[in-house]
Amino acid sequence: MANDYVAWLLAIASFAFVMTFTPGPNNIMLATSGANFGMKRSMPHVMGVAFGFPAMLVVVAVGIGYVFQFPVVRGVLRVVGLAYIIYLAYLIASANTLSSARQSKPITFWQAAGFQWINPKAWAQAIGATSAYLSLDFNKYAQIIAMALVFLPIGIASSWIWAAFGVRIAALLNTPTKLRTFNVIMAAALLVTILPVILTY
Image (cartoon, rainbow, N blue to C red):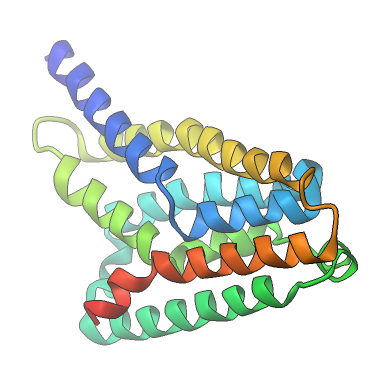
């Protein structure tokens, strides 16, 4: 039984690692925040993503998120999420000067945590994790807590690394033209992350 539980935890950790470190709306936005605002000002964003997803995972896994599985609710969330990500991409692309980008405000902890509920990739993670890894062999609630605790440190590491990546790039963005080019590229990358959702709508 102990070996089975360890194997289960390793499977969850592998899933969490792949899903959190690969590019998606969260990571693109974190890198952009790091480049435009620096690590210190981006930390609420980092922590909001890292803590927001495990909280969402718990809600979905417990069953409170059942209402979000109804087609109408899911459709509304999808439209709102896509519209908001497109809006964010516009804001990123339009921050075309050093002053406009660096005088604006980074995303707050609560904004980043709340964003998970309209983030298509976060939904894929939550539904994928609960449907694939909740097992009848262990206590359901113990499993849910364990899953959240596995995602939390991996999420913190991933979010910090993506923001740090942006900070490192910031040293090269010493002119308005370079910063604008970077922001346009990141805005385009953000839109690319939602293409699968749009194409399957």
